[in-house]
Each structure stands twice: as C-alpha cells, then as structure tokens.
Length: 303
Image 1 (cartoon, helix red, strand yellow):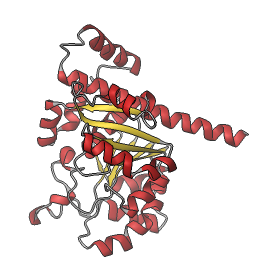
Image 2 (cartoon, rainbow, N blue to C red):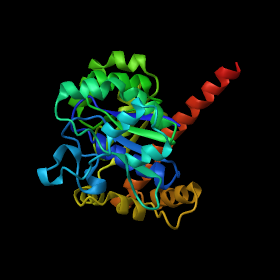
Image 3 (tube, one colour):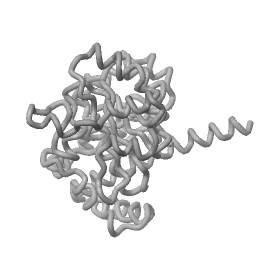
Image 4 (cartoon, rainbow, N blue to C red):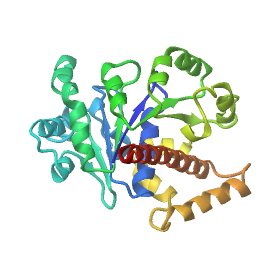
C-alpha cells in the first residue's frame, strides 16, 4: 500500500494528465488497485477524461452527476470510522474490468468551509482509504499550498511534474531547495516531453545532477492520440488498446515489445508506441522506488 502525491511548482506542467497515464499503467499492467483523487477546489480536470464531466466545470444541469459520492462523502465516512472497502467503492466511480477507482473532488464552493470541513481531516481519510487499495494517487494543488505541503509529508513518493521550460526548471530548483532537502522520496516527471529539445532528459541529468538521476526521473512524451483521447473523454479505451491489455500476459512480454520497438526503429517509431514505452518505464521506476522504500522499512524494523 502506498500514497503517491503529484505536485507541480506552477500550473500547466501536465500534472493531471501524467497522473492519469501512470494510474492506468499501474492498474491495467501491474494489476494494482488504484484510487485516483484530487484536492483542488476548482479548475481541475481529473474526472473529465475518464467520465466526461469534471467537478470544477459542472453546469447547473450536471450538478447531480456526482451527488452523494466523491471526496466529501469519503471524508464523512472517515470521520465516522466507516471508510471500509465497500464504503470507499460506494464513494467512487468504478470502471468495468478494471481495479481503478475514481474519487471525484469536493462539491464545496466556499474555501473557508472546504478548509475547515475537508482539508482538516483529509490526511486521515487518505490513511483510511490506503487500507483498501494498493496505491492512492493524489492530484494536489501546485505551489506552496498548506494542504499540498502536508500531503507531501504523508506521501511515500512525491512526483514533481515539470516541463522542459528553462524558466520553470531554474525557478523550481532555485526556489524549492528547502523542499528538495527535506524530502528524499522525490520522482521527477517531465510531461509533454520532446526528446529533440535542448532540455531533453539526458541534458537535464547533467545540468541538475545534484537532484536528478536516471532512477528518480522519467518522461511522458507528447502524444497526439493521448491528447485527443483526453478531449474525447476516452483515455481508458485508448490505454487499453495501447497497452494491449487483453493480449499481453506479463510485464516481460510488454518490456520485450517496447524494447524491440525502441531498438529496431529508434528513428521512425510511432509516436504512440514511444508514449506508452516511456510511460511504462516511468511507472516501473516509481514502483521500484516504492519497493526500495518498503524494503528499507522492513530492514529497519528487523534491525
């Protein structure tokens, strides 16, 4: 069981779309029971690409879509010590033939009420929910929001979402030294990645080698089909097809498939194949970090 917090220093770093594809890889390939959730009050699109509507963009006629489910309901049950397996699932949107759970965000519109009634007990709710799933994926607010800082302290892995913008990278590493020094469980994920950029991952490994290495970093390349699937609210079907979910039996076969693509047609491989190859690699590295952390805890306990 693990808690993974997705965070960005600024808006527009591809955080939510990165969380989507990593969650789908963990669920469809690794067969993990994954809970996806968000802590934003507005302007977040976690739900939309999966179900067609998002909490932050509901019209009046859509107001009943997430009624009696979501973050508010989960927090209420947690307060009553009732957030067990079946209750958690009743608060979520589920998807046939998957182990994926989507917990829609808050319906509250007043920030003071949200912070008092939800944020104050959110960490407890996450700890309760973690008992019922393998992985909790948390889409947190960007920047130095108090709740995001608290969630980072709770997390097993902090996924810092960045792009290849020199301005964003330099600002992040200059302004968040305290965060980087405090937390060692950080994974750097470059979204909308362009391997032809001067700020490709290899050059970033050199320029920011004090923080980034091959094991704690990954990429999610730009992919036209993935962007279209997000707009069409159909990313689950796109991921099923791209990951050959119904035909591939184990990770070794998948690795062989994508390694073969990468080696034999490195210059001409399809954009979508490269997208899935890199997404799988990033998900595997995140899982390796979690497993390494678990092993260290077990050793310490035996110690």
